[in-house]
Length: 168
Image 1 (cartoon, rainbow, N blue to C red):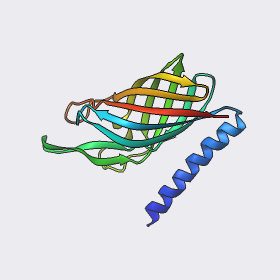
Image 2 (tube, rainbow, N blue to C red):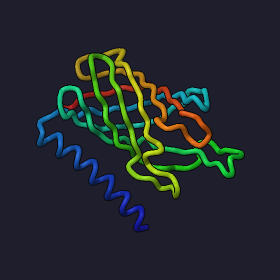
Image 3 (tube, one colour):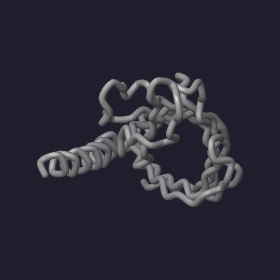
């Protein structure tokens, strides 16, 4: 029970932190929702709801947090891996750098809930393209992958489609 209370407080802390940071720095907030995903492992499109909120530090650099879950494979004695069976973290830190209609992203789990697995083992790097933009509303496509190969030697790439909006 204490774990869930701490997790709830951590969520509240980060949400409050980013809202106050954007308020006091007089910067805009970007809320992004990814709705469709195709992973290299499953090779099928699936519906997801990954929401992120971030604040711009300058015109191009965004810091934020996302509710995208970070998973890892379970493997014992290098036999019979079970794909995405270990939940590493419920939330991830997010850094994006925008230039024109392209962006680079870096996501890392906040912490690791799995013994013998560091949060840095699941860092993801990606690139994206904003293919339609109307005022403060943007549609984007993103591909990201693990920076370090997992135990099976896979990078576990992900293609996502989503939209974002800017709040002032």
